[in-house]
Length: 93
Image (cartoon, rainbow, N blue to C red):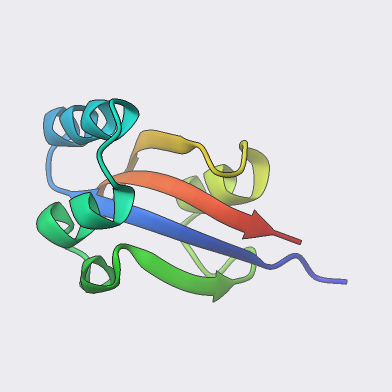
């Protein structure tokens, strides 16, 4: 069976901002609220929710985090051609 994951992310232009937001979340800020306020991705309006996707549907650096790293932990900043992501995998099968 093919793996499926659900992830939320925050996309910003600078690594410095991504790191600052990660620290805010670590101190208790709500990931979804931070995404709605700061993310430049359209998913930001939904708290960063990207819904379900399979390996290969996202850029490689993003996929590596979602399908290989710890679930429910905020990872990043992860640099892609789109900018810097903070990624939280909600679940994967």
